[in-house]
Amino acid sequence: MTEHLLKILVVGDGNVGKSSFVHRYVNGHFNQTYKMTVGVEFSVKMLQWSDKEKVRLQLWDIAGQERFISMTRIYYKGAMGCVVMFDVTSSSSFRSCRHWKQDLDNKAMLPNGESIPCILLANKCDLPQRVVSADSIDRFSEANGFIAWMEISVKDNKNIGEAMRRLVENILSVQ
Ligand code: GDP
Image (tube, rainbow, N blue to C red; front, top):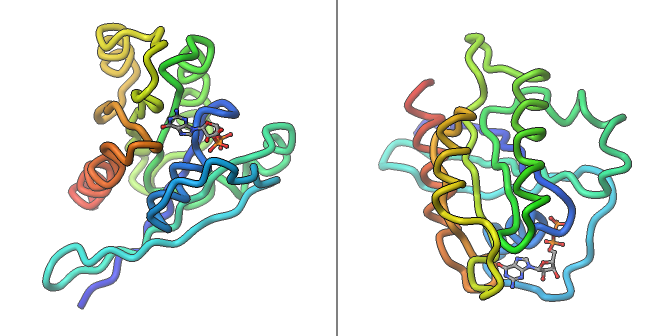
């Protein structure tokens, strides 16, 4: 049995659903009142990937943006993959994704010098007041070197496992 240890970062503006996403993925439920954590912490999820492979995922969620600056180095160190998340009802959170992706590419790379595989997640697709179109996400994802983008709803448990599987597949394929 091989065990892969993968450190995955979860970045994006405040309030887009990062903590809820990690919580849902790791613990399997949506908690409306889940409190925003302060600082950086990680959650662990084990996956039976194949007959012979297990994956231990470390999900690093940044929370408390104001503390981010001083945490940057330790936060990025050893990362193998990244989730960049925005909220489809907030165009500013979508615009920020360029910054998050560039920041990642400036500060971290894989041991082989390539950029860290990054998936773009459009959260809260359960909400009717959507302001970011699929077309613009598509173009943005393509132009900024994301491996893929997906619509998700942490609330409705839509595409959560699928998104993470997609990212892990990509990470393991380049290893
Ligand atoms: P973070 O600051 O990015 O970690 O965001 P949180 O996980 O704290 O979520 C911010 C708010 O969005 C909370 O009130 C969540 O309940 C809510 N939220 C998260 N995901 C969804 C979703 O998929 N749909 C809806 N409608 N609300 C969500």
